Image (cartoon, rainbow, N blue to C red):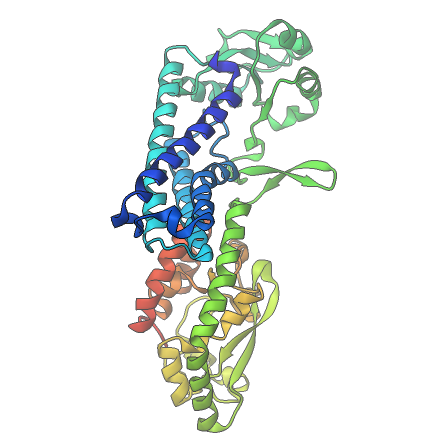
Length: 469
């Protein structure tokens, strides 16, 4: 019964999520010590009801956006856990923002306590269901029948992978290939079918999915397989390691009216990137208002020292190498760029980066501003207009980028930021190769939680002036 009712299970899980969320909200809101109010609905009325509905319904919405309700049959434990953790962070943020926007008299910590307990309950229930399903599959229940197209080394490896994961519940019915194709030794005893038998196989057998694991040279001959699966409505999975292990994992996209495979080193969730951008806008607006007096005092000090320009605009490379004018408070003498060639021999950084620890072009006010990174505050404007982010790889100058190796250009594949792992991990004390390594590590493992941790570490790094110059 369960085999053909994946959508029913997803609907039941969605219903369970709403019920558990509502139960936990109701329990917590009745505790004045946690909620901060004795009679929540009497004191806030409709606003409290709106927050309550948000607390109960935002979980299914977030789970839907992160594909938590999709099939997790072949996903690993960490993949599932990561989605649940990210969902919890998003829900806590949304619930806190809703409580703030409606001005309900809840305690400040209530949204986070509520989201944390709801997340734990929903995760525990979901993991229990998943564990039960996997246990059932190991004993032959809730299984899926698959046909593998191919009979060579790739097909044999796929069969070994399926056999090594009984919790997936996949039963291989046989292998479909050209009659004269070489068969892997481990598949000599397996059931073999020819490609022209595909329509009959899908008509006479119960096939839940077709897995294509042919060599690249055979792609042109599997058109009958695609046609048969399309005609019968049987899902088809094409393994994308056809071009070797060096290609990144693709995603399905659209190019005009045509479907496409999108290859990128890292696929970041577009919804989470939207949340990151929203945080950038709100954070930069708040920070600009808070830092305006500091920037004003610093600007006055810069002007009084040498009567030169207060701000310095420097061309930097942003997302995929797009050039933009990055703003800073001027910390060097007015003719600093013209004098740069005189100091090339004093460069203390490896690679294409130019840094001089005791740069003679730095003014007295500039040295103080640099020590505590106050010269970077105008970049909040770059964040607000979308050229930068609060967190991301630092934007390099074009003169550095032209000397990048091809692999080093991948650090330009994410919007640059005011702070990054390099910024909080030693700054100028880190060499260029380690700098690139840290930036790529950030890009590959990016999450909203990682951004939050970097922002939290930035404050002490700046206050203590670690690695600054």
